[in-house]
Length: 77
Image 1 (tube, helix red, strand yellow):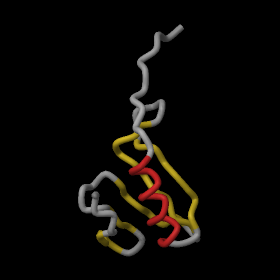
Image 2: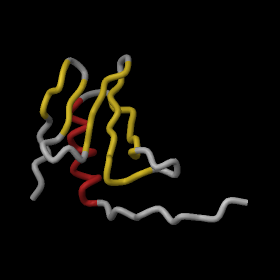
Image 3: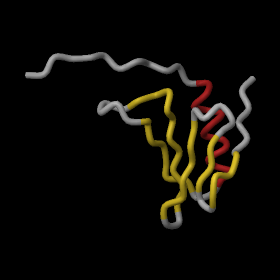
Image 4: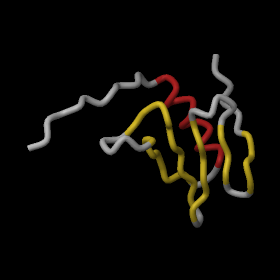
């Protein structure tokens, strides 16, 4: 079982001990970044917004259970 607790980097910035997830506060909302699941631009998949860190914690558990699907490299037209 993974360690899903959050480690504080600085005010409004956290990460999980395995560094898969990072959490940042932007204005009144929280955003979760998953470095194992990348978007179509090769950037960490961003999940949110969340109203509080309790919601972020539940999302981390859900994301760990979700199967990571690697992106297919397509041909540019």
